[in-house]
Image (cartoon, rainbow, N blue to C red; front, top):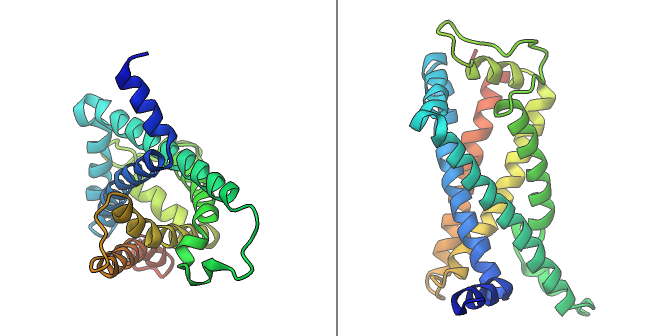
Length: 232
């Protein structure tokens, strides 16, 4: 085994290396969230814009672009989940007995619920991928709907899906958990990358909360708009 491979293996096996992987994979996922929200907000422009955007993504680089993105996101998601679990287990082993005074009382809610919210978010992602990527019919369409130009009718499926109160509720709760996860994760990301100082910590906390709030409002507004009939 080469010196480089040995050094890389040692780095990945260390807690610092794992934290860096969690941070960098989280950064990739944050970029995806921002892009995904931008695309979803096209529902307010109309079906032609929404379906045209979906068609563009599926034919980008002759269809290979979407698969490259999927593979990168899958690797980032798996790395984020696996190394986060490993770090959590290592932290618990290092502190097998609870302190007499629980030191996490002052921890943020996002920090306390990171593991649970992460697992619930994973369940949501699986459902979302089955519906919109694998295109399994979960709402009784029979054949997957196409628009007047023969494109996969993402707009119609989105409206039909969010017309179900329980689906919308599940979606909004999942987004809320995701944003709870983000509110702590964004701040931790800057700290792991060595960009946090006593002066900037408060700024990054505000940035994390602001980003999380924007993501929540953007995503949650869509099912609410469908339920209230603002988007048809």
